[in-house]
Length: 102
Image (tube, rainbow, N blue to C red; front, side):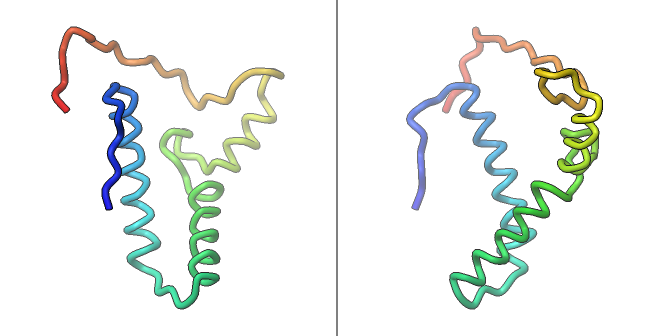
């Protein structure tokens, strides 16, 4: 079964790459490694992998900190109402005159 987006914007292409990267990690680190016996077993193993991925594992976008550690560090130094950012990022310039074939 294939899913296709009806939108062809640049943001959608970026999202697709992000989703494919995540799906590859899930497949390589969990689905291809584990043996599932029941639906409850699937849910349990996926939940443990999700918690590891979202809370314990270092992420390069967070300056190689685990999300929980980064959140705790940020909470201790943050100005109320500010958004957490590990380092300043500049958005790349987009040349809208170039048409990318889909």
